[in-house]
Each structure stands twice: as structure tokens, then as C-alpha cells.
Length: 506
Image (cartoon, rainbow, N blue to C red; front, side, top):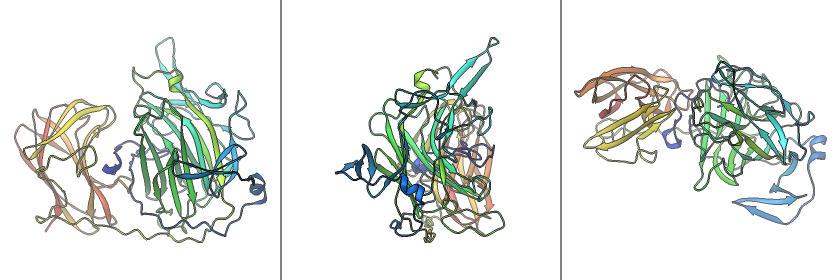
């Protein structure tokens, strides 16, 4: 959950638009890139090297029972615990004893307001905010209002660092998340030695579950790594129900050359593409930084860059609590760490017959704008609006421009950005009333660097042509993104855009 610009542009999976604190940094969180810079995995290489230590072997349970199957993941019930096939129980907490979490298993964390990501809560190491009751861990955010009307928030954050760390395995928890704007619950992992490869993000971070309190039907699983910071992310959207009103099982399967994310046994994302390095030096040997022990963290953040701040609709009662039925770690006996980094093949999109890399840039097709087409319309951080393609233009109407410039946003991903090339970016636009809009060409999978910087344009009631040229000086990227930001810039006036082009300049 640690990132540098956490929610500047949260985009949905197909929009390529997309978290936790680690390595002691106090930098703010980066935005969300979904299913970004990953390749399809090769076969999982878990065979003969890197045996468990004697202590780990003692922890692993040996008995076997009749195999069962849970939503596509084969499991075996061992001593009453459903265990993934070929794994052995390494450590678990079923939260059977009420009160404060046991010191031999858990650490309570203490952090001041704004420690990361401009979050509003103070983390206080007290069983008032993280405690066990009725067979579950409860992390309870609290809103306080003093006699002068000043509002403050307190929450809980706990981890297993130095007590139960694991290197490779199956890590899962059964959780019910809070519901309400401004809540960001998380089940995630950071290294035992956070400075081993250097400060975040070089040290690596694994996010198993993050569900926004105002979007309780979608879970995000994310990998953070690199220098520059990169992230791979997938999302899982429930077809029925939500993550706040019933429990769901969130799991990570972690091997030396592959990571997989599951919800209720359903595989929804996998990646084998990561790295770490120090600026000016060569990359560390793969699979660094994810070749070291990691520990589990559970917390509920309040406010901050990604979820936005609570509002009058946010209720701080039982609905604000994250409830954890159990945390379990499983491990295989042997792991082969003699793995090679996969070679990622770039697929540079070809321009159309006119030289345009933007598909449907003339808006001749009235396509779906939810993420299933070429264009995606996004409403983020309190932005409320709508978009319609009609008569060769796209019309963006806004009722609330939100808290950020990108709160109302139109994007198209998969732009082929080639180092050393010169590009021309152009479009025509107007507005029902004079107002501003920002345009950019960005890198969702490369720490959101700007190939063409955020550039403000003044819109009038007449169609105007806007043309920009820029040099591509960064490394090749087949996942660039054109975007228009129409959020918090002082107006809700309706915007019209047509004839969007990104092409190589002469």
C-alpha cells in the first residue's frame, strides 16, 4: 500500500489505469494500474531446491484426508483446515481467544496522521482498534469530534514481522471489509528486512486484498517493485453480492517465478514479470525482490489519495470494521529458485491507414465506454458525469467535477511509445461554456511518467484544433495512454471532443 502518487489516476482493468506502505517511506501512494506490465506465466517451477528449515518442517502438518475441490482450486481437509493441494500448513491464526492479539504472533503498529498517502487516521497500538472477538479479528476505525468540532480518526494496523514470515507459499485470509466512502482495508505483505534491496519500491510489496469502501464489489491484487516504480495489478469483480456484507477468501500463491491471486478459489490474475535495481546499477538477479521472507499486514486506512476522504454518508459503526475470520500460511516442501526472468515481448500497436495510433479517434463508432471498447470514461474521486459518442464526437457532461483534475477522465490505452521517435498529438474540442481541460500521454505501467506532460487547454464555444509535438525519450513502451482530464478545474461545462490523433511526426 505504499506508493508515490497513489490515486492520481485509478482506472479500471481495461483502461490500464493503477498501493501500501513499506520500507519506511512516507511518500504518497501511486495510482492504480490494472493488469498492466505482465506476461502470461510459464509453467510453475516448484521442484527440488530450497528445502524448508527444520522449524518450518515441524510446523507443516503431515496428515491427509479425502480431497475436496473449492471453486477450481483442489484442496484437502487436514486437521479441520482446508489446505491447497500439495501444500502443508505453515502457520495460522483462527482468532479463537478474545481480547488483545498475542504478542508472540502479532505486532501492533503506531503511526501518526498523514504518515503515508495523505491518510487521515492515526494508528494507535491498542486493542480498542484491533482486537479479537467472537472468533474473528476486528480492526475498527473510529471518528472523534472534540468540543470545538475538530474531527480526527483513529484505526488499527497489525503485522507478523519477525514472528511469522514466509518465503514462497500460499497465503490467505477470510475477510469481510468495511463499507463507506473513505475506507481502504488491506491484507498485504512486506519484506522481513525492508532495506535488503533498498527503500520502497525496490524492496517489493505484495497486496492481496484492497477494496474501496465506496466500491465494495471490486477487489484489487497488486505487485509493486522496481526503480523506477512499476506495478502489476489485477481486479476481481463479484457477479453477485459484495465484499462488505459477506465473508470472502482472498489468497496469494507465490512461487519463485510466478504469483497468482485468487478470490474464493477463483484465479483472477497472475504475473511472472518483475525486477528490482538501484539507479545507476544493474538489475538484481531475478526473482529479486520477491526472493526473501515477507510478513502479513492487516489495516484499515481512512481517507487518503486513493479512497478520498469520508463524507457525511460515512458511518463509523460496525459497518466501518474489517473482520478477519482467519489468516493462514501454507508452504510446499521444495521450491526451485533456479529460475530465469521471462522475456516480455512488446506488441507495438500498428497505426491505421492514416497513420493514427488512436482507434476510433474520429468517434465514428458509438462504442461501449465502460472499459470493453477502445475508449474508457472514468469517474474518480467524487467525479460524477456521463459520456456519449454521437455524430462523430464524444460529449462529456459533468454534474460534479470531483476533488481531482482527473476525477472526470477519458482515456485510451495501448499506445506504442518508441524511444527516439517524435510524435504529434492532436484533437479538436469545444465546451458549452469557456473552461479548461488537460490532455496528456502517460505511462500507466511505468510509474505514471508523462511522455507528453499534462497540458492545459482553454476551450471556447467554437471548435478549435489543438496540436502538440513531443520527443519520446524514455524506454520503449507498448502500453502508453492518451488521456483527457476534465475534473476539478473550476467548471462543469459540457465538453465536446473529436478527431483525436497520435501519430509519428515527420
